[in-house]
Length: 243
Ligand SMILES: C[S@@+](CC[C@H](N)C(=O)[O-])C[C@H]1O[C@@H](n2cnc3c(N)ncnc32)[C@H](O)[C@@H]1O
Image (cartoon, rainbow, N blue to C red; front, side, top):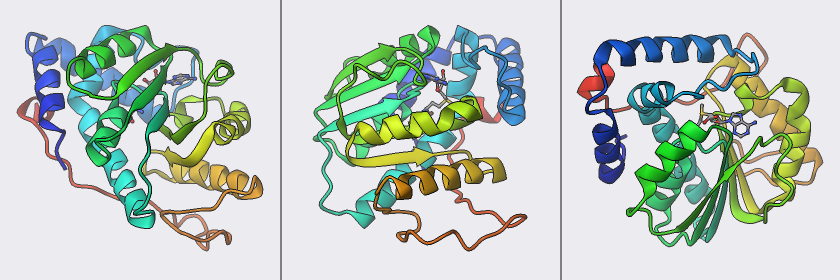
């Protein structure tokens, strides 16, 4: 899976003049924070260099995972044509790009993102290329979702692992209230990510949701730890990414 060409070009040009040693150091720090699922009150991507490290080392994989999830959704619901997207923890616009790729008729996207440094990069990548009207909203998704309107597709990808576990049920509840049609939750393919998906799944079933994918049933998951469930995708890596 490759990034859409305009996104790849935008990323390349943002990374063009960045000194490699600084980028490598930022990528190491980012990777350690993600691996440890560190929640120390700081955003992993509070600084511009951390955002650049994300573009170089993580965006290709999160894009591939998100795009594959949308494909699974389109397979399960061939009639689904979202006109509006609400993406929580939007990062550099990963879901925006993937949704536009899957449904070019998308009309409006609202992107909630806590980090100003990330919003700036996301806005500059999308400017002039994404046809849908986009609105970037600053805020903490665990407390600031009140003024938002419901959307056809509501999504949250690679974010639950950054939220305090005690805040998750309320967040999932709020996301479901904002969902006019379909809610997509994507988490890292790790045992902990799988557990968060299972917890959100159970909560949504109890709230009356109908499950589409990956398992279109509402029975308890038959897997028990140490078994766990995840999906993999091949990702094309740029020269910079390999470095
Ligand atoms: C790992 S990135 C994922 C970005 C994008 N969704 C993707 O799949 O590439 C997580 C993003 O969520 C944002 N975030 C984390 N906690 C948040 C919160 N409580 N409210 C809003 N944004 C949050 C972070 O700043 C970061 O940009």
